[in-house]
Length: 205
Image 1 (spheres, rainbow, N blue to C red):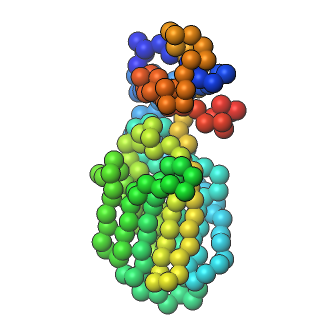
Image 2: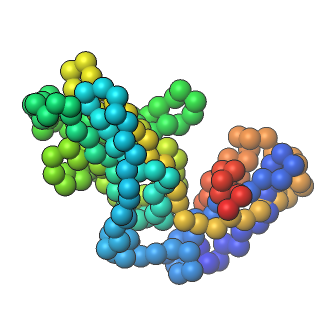
Image 3: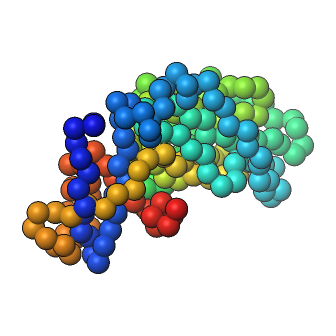
């Protein structure tokens, strides 16, 4: 909000948080209807191992808080003789090293969305072999890495999509003084500022 002025935060020697401005601040937040009108064009990376071949976007896809974004993922078979109703599509969020959060799963016409993604995640369904999902009303917690896995009986392949959020990186110092917060205290301080901890890449950028 405009009335909330970001304050510096001390964490370790110096850490930063990402402050995602709301739609009341036009310099860093785009209206949701504009986001829906924009569509990213991405190239694909191909892994030619196995009968199922998954293709995802290199680099990352970018949106803003409250917007909509497509996480691109396509697949095909070698040879092309698979019943589409036997294909399982699964999306998970990589939350930490070897830790995953279920987002979406589909087997034929049956679909299920998990947790906070319910009502916000849908298959794009742009044609045969499209495993892309659309995330609506993107939140701060959606930032990060997603895994797209396509399984055909015993054969499967996986691709990754990195979702980044547009925002403002700013320093914040607690009233207690600099270098007083541990990691979890830093996370809590960020939440109080309606923000998240900045990644190394965000800080560098």
